[in-house]
Image (cartoon, rainbow, N blue to C red):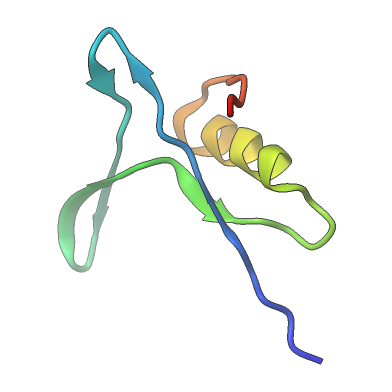
Length: 64
């Protein structure tokens, strides 16, 4: 059986600005929304909250 990993991503808008996370790797400098794979048994909402906390050190409330 194959496990399909779902990517959870947050779009955070405040004061007409979008929160992006800066990454600098072998491909160079780039910006992404806070995101990552949901862990087995974790809901998408739980994954979004965890990824934002891990990547941007922000606590969020997930809306519709």
